[in-house]
Image 1 (cartoon, rainbow, N blue to C red):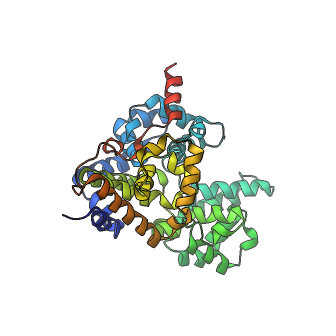
Image 2 (spheres, one colour; image 1 turned 60 degrees about the vertical axis):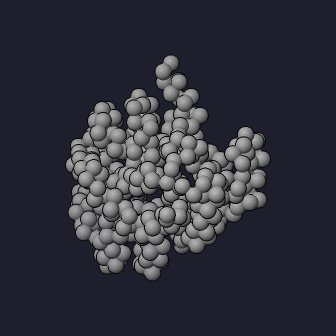
Image 3 (tube, rainbow, N blue to C red; image 1 turned 120 degrees about the vertical axis):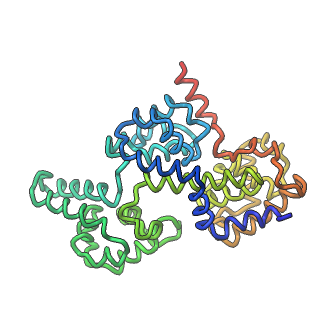
Length: 373
């Protein structure tokens, strides 16, 4: 029998290949084709939530499929947007909702929400705003021509080299992000773009200039390669997330521990506080199992639990792939000791066969109650 750890490693060692295999599954391929063929036709929140097939695809992609029936709840979240700290989505402790609204931001972009691309329309809009600040009317023919040229040509940029080689496009983009003073410093821009924004220790993430960070996020060649200038979170971004959710779901059908390990691997780099672990059933299950803590520990005072975790684990270790792998090896070993060698059988203690990201937080339940009222 293949060990739980080896089952996890077989998937995780080449996650891109594993995801490609998932994407080729007939059911996944069929739903993905429907989604991509139809999502750009959606022009409002009502159209979105009322297209059950599209809506369920998007909800699953964001780990919210257990809530795909709650259309009134999601409509309220989408209509409130995320710009206001006091918006409905931002008030929920479960941040998956705010992430969902960020991707499908009808509040900010209206009917363009499903085609909005930060490197295209996002940059064009910022350029126009910068022009206004400088006293140039948005109706100025020159400004309009510059914007149209940018939107036409930026889609053909497939690499950092392409971007840096086209002074017109690069200067337009830099001005859009309030970085006119960086025009001419291509060495700096290359360093910013090559490092990307995913790694907390990347060059740009260590800078205090938020404009540089916004620029790197919009032109994220480090993450999306040649699709960076056409990447749309509401389109390919959701497809990628759907494939990952399905991969973890398929793994869980055979072995819940593998599903939990893959989920932890995906979330590990975002962990900056023990409270994030305590607020997530799946993350908590992994950590408690790895540390050999009894299930009853969840009944202790939350602050005391947080202090205990701070003493037992270093969250910064999860930024290191080797240290993360060792931690997950420990988890899978302890899992088998705790649950027996028949690791392919589902343990009812593990979130009823679903990763905890599908659980409903207290704030969500309260919000649903309010909506019913």
